[in-house]
Length: 91
Image 1 (spheres, rainbow, N blue to C red):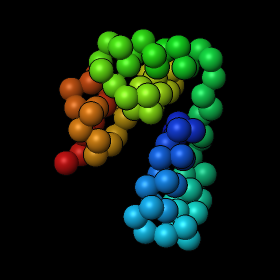
Image 2: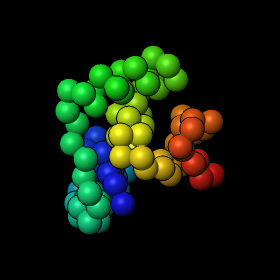
Image 3: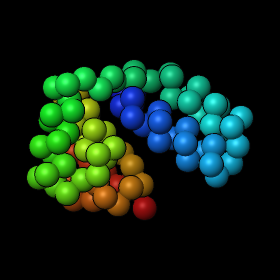
């Protein structure tokens, strides 16, 4: 399993906001079992191109660029990924 570093931010923030800090820390702990891919300059530039090409928000573009770099599939419930090659949206 692969996780973009930006996903750690997103999951922690949403779970802490909607549930509790304790649950957010638990969620991040589970994410640490995966390989956490850092965001570097090259990835940021790739993500910017993908953002412009597909109309993605910054975080989504970084997640998508990370998956493409590692030849991984994005599996998400986020409909913003709908129709993107290499992305599966679970409804």
